[in-house]
Structure formats: structure tokens, C-alpha cells
Image 1 (tube, rainbow over the protein chains, first blue to last red):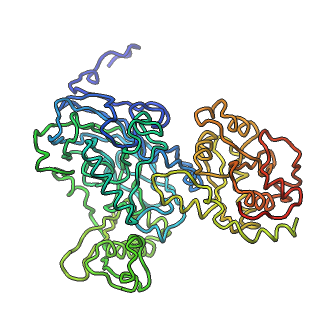
Image 2 (tube, rainbow over the protein chains, first blue to last red):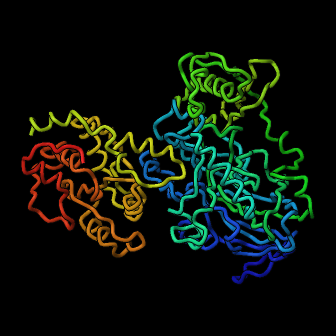
Image 3 (cartoon, chains in turn red, green):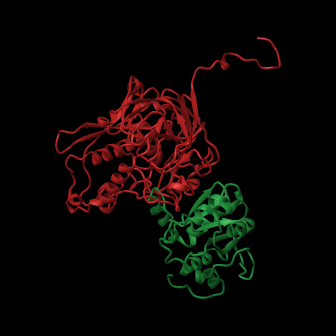
Amino acid sequence: MGTAAVSLADTTEVKWQDTVTVAKTGTHCVDDPNCFNRYHPAIPPISRAKPGQMIVFQTRDALDSDLTLDSNADDLAAVDLNLVHPMTGPVHIEGAKRGDVLAITLVDIVPDEYGYTVIVPGFGFLRDIYTEPFLVNWKLSRTHAVSDQMPGVKVPYEAFMGSVGVLPGAPEVKDWLARETALGSAGGVALPPQPTGALPTAVCGPEGSNKTECLRTIPPRENGGNMDVQQMQIGTTLLLPCFIDGCGLFVGDVHYAQGDGEVSGTAIEMGAVVTVRTEIREGQAAVIKGPEVEGGPQIRNMEPTKFYQTIGLPLKQSGVVPTQYTYLESKKITDLSNLSEDLTLAARDALIKMIDYIQRKHGLSAEQAYILASVAVDLRVGQVVDVPNYIVTAVLKEDVFDE
Amino acid sequence: MIRRRRLLKVGLAAAAGLLLGGHTPYQQWVVYRRKHLLIGCHKADPRTYDLAKQTVALLTEHLPAAKARVARAPDAGRLASLLGTGQLDVSILDRADTAAMSQGLGAFAPYGQTALRVLIPLDDRILVARADFPVRYAWLLTGALAGTELAAAPDVAAEHGVPWHPGSVDFLQGRPEPGDD
């Protein structure tokens, strides 16, 4: 009220929250003792929190990148992929035991001011079609994301944790490594432990104590991790079985917004400050064996006020093998033009039709349309009964266009 | 020079990726890096970016099989990381960074020593490669750039802080294109 030069305590000084902050320090994960990028029960907790306390995670972007608003595809080619995914934590939840369920309520996400969406060569749902790097830089606020590379588009703020999870126990590491090794041996996409660039170095690095067992962060598993499920909005509660005492809670790879499918391989990726609150549900891991989510009106609130929808069928050209099927080495699939009860092919069909629509109706390039689909198009299952043609649809949130 | 450059129309397919020993979470990236010869440069030295773009343009004209692309890192330290882990084979650096990176000194200490070889000086910067870059590819790259506006008359006797690549020396001393390593 007055003009005193000295600032006195005001309502800002009134506190009630009991908070534990897991701070971000250093330029990259490798510089930060609160950051790691592999999963193993031997990774020590860097902090402790009681159930009910607010836990504030200061997180890094998925690529642990140096990208900025003036970055372009040339910068993408120089990204150091050994740095993916930087996770903040793990935090020991006091009182939690193996066999309990940890309920993690997302309280808030404060976005960085910058985010990006990319086409990564060889990655993404249509990686056979989009083979060159492409980068869209986003200016972020708490309401919308806009981009000079995406004129006329405003993507609403619908942030969530792309990755959130708990550390696996020793039995889980053994089982998951075995099943992924078998898949890799069969030609599937399964990434074995890789000590190069692995953090923490003492556990997972080239001379680490458990270097041959540290799980990669790319696949989501029963412990959560890189799930990329956009409905996990602020206010929802994620349930995860606890595999070690204290659980080892971690958060990272936050998304400003994403379509169901994240089809280009990335959402609007960003660093962010994430606040969660936990609750222990004793013994519930006997029935909840993987991630499950409790929510309220969040799903309804994410629905568009107008939309355009394409309908995908499991059809393809005879003689062509979509990338997702190459490991099966099936002549039968090659020769067919219609696959049976196949959601992947139906999703591909719906997405390609949607990209065509966005180009035709809104004048974006193919790359822009693919990027937009990754952040504002939802792939949805229509039906899984009308054999042989299961349907997946692609739903564009038309609200993202300014006009 | 023109006679030699005609030879460059052949070969170097997949040159970029044959040396990729780097391990990436996204294995598919290797496909891209096998398809293209990435020319490293960095934001902290904008001159390297200008030269990288000019180099790619020249390679597209004289050595199209390389499918050259620019890869711009935020700083020379990131280039050391990429070169040192085999995620990148070729880069443009200034003389001081070339020497310091090869010895793992100063800002490059966290990455250790990175064995580099000179492919060709480009104006006031240097095009370098990992020491294990194949002799034939070095011969082809040097041949594609020598005699252009960026490298009018390279002198193989000149010192640049790290040794010349033997393939580059072969080209500049008039020896024929070597076979694959």
C-alpha cells in the first residue's frame, strides 16, 4: 500500500504445503546427481518423501537437448541420442513396501517456455514414409502453444508426464530382460542394456555394478515409465505396483500436448516443473499388476468442440510389407491386400487419410501435417468385432486452427 | 582436377554410416546416419555452420552418393561427444578446437582424446574426420572439395594441429583412388 523500499511479508509468505523438491542442476543429466536414464533396483534414491507431501520434480526434455527457438533440422541431426531419457529421481516413499500400490496424483505442471516436436529419421509410426528430419519449435504458455513453423495453429495446454514410474525389483529385471531378449532374437524391436551413456554411471555405466541388467527407458512396462498416455492430466491419479521398498518414484519426459498415438514419435516435448502427491495402498499390488489410472472430468475437458474424423481399415497394397510387420518375414502378409483383425494397419490407414485431409483442407505440408497429427490427432479404436476389418479412426481437433 | 572429380561420381554410398559404432537408444537413427554423410559444425562458431552448408552444396554437386547433410551441434564439446562415440565421422572445426579436442584439453577434457585427421582446410577452418575414417572415403571427400572456392589450393605440407588423413594425402599427391579399407 505504501512506498516503503523494504519488501515486507505479505500473503505470499503464508505457507501450508509440506514440500520436497528434487532440483535440477547442471546442463545435462550427466551433470546432475538427481538425474538418471536407466532402470535398476540398485539405483539409490536421491531423496525421501512421506505420503501426502508435495514432491516437486524439476525435469528435462526427452532428448536432454540443447534445442532453442532458432533450431532447425540441422540441429536435430546432431542430437546426442545417448542422453535419452533423462529422469528426475528416484524418490524413496517412506513406508511403501514391495507389494503395495503407490497412488500418484498429478497436482501441477509448470511448462518451460520452449518446446519442440520432431520427425526423427527411422522412428515414428510412418517411419517408412517420413525419412528426413523435421523440427517444429513451439512457444509455450499456460494456455496455448504456437509456432512460426506451424502458422495458424494454436495447440491448447494439456500437459502430462510422458514418463512416470517406479523402479523394478530384481525379479522384474530378470523377467523383463528375458522376454525382451527373446523378442529381439526373433527380430522384434527390443533394446538390450547399453552401458554407453548410461546413468547413474556407478550402477549402469561401462564399469557399473549392474551394467548388463540396467533396463532402457524407451519401452513402458509394468512399472510405468515411458507410457505417453495423454489422459494422465492434472488431477488424475496413477496407480503403480511397488516393486522395491520405497518404490523409487521418478518423473521425466513431460509433454505439453499430444495426440493419442504420438504418431511422429514425439509430442510437444519440454522441460517442466511437476508436482505430485503420493498415497500408499497397502498390499494392492496383488490385484493391480501394472499402471492404471483414476480420473474425473479430465477426459471430457480434452474433447474438441469440432472435429474431423477419418476411418481406417486394415488394407494395404499387395506385395508391400508395412514396417511393423517386417520382422515376421511372412510371405502370406506380403501377398495380401487385406489383413485380418489388424488394428495397426487400420491405424496406419486412418492416419495417412488424416494427413491427406490436413494438407488438402488446411494447406500444410506433409511434414507439418504429420507433426500436427502427433500433437492434435487422436487415434481411436472404432470396433474390434466386424471381421476382418477392425476400425481405427483418426480424430483431428479442429479447434487448433485459428480460423 | 576435373578428371579426378569424374571418379567421384562413383562410390561412397553409405559412406556416412559404415563406421557407426555408436550405440543409440533409437537404433533406427543409425539408418539415417548410414544413409547420409553428416558434416558436423556448431552454433558457438557460426562460421562453421556457413562452411558446412557450402560444403554440403559442393558435395551434393560433386559427390552426390554421399547424400551429405549438415549436423549442427550447440558447441564443440557436443561434437567431441558425437565424434568420440562414433555418432559422427566428419566435422568442421577451427584450428584451436581441432588441437584441443584431439588432446582432450580444456573444455574437451570430459570427452578424452579424440583422434582426428585433416581432410582439407576450408577457408579459415578445417574439415576433419575420425582417424578411422576409411582411406577411400577421405580420398573421395578431399577430391570433391579440392580446387573449389572453399579450398582452392590445399597444401599437404601445411600443419593444422593434427595429422593429415592418409587418404587425403593420397589424393593431393596424385595417387589413384584406393580400394575399400
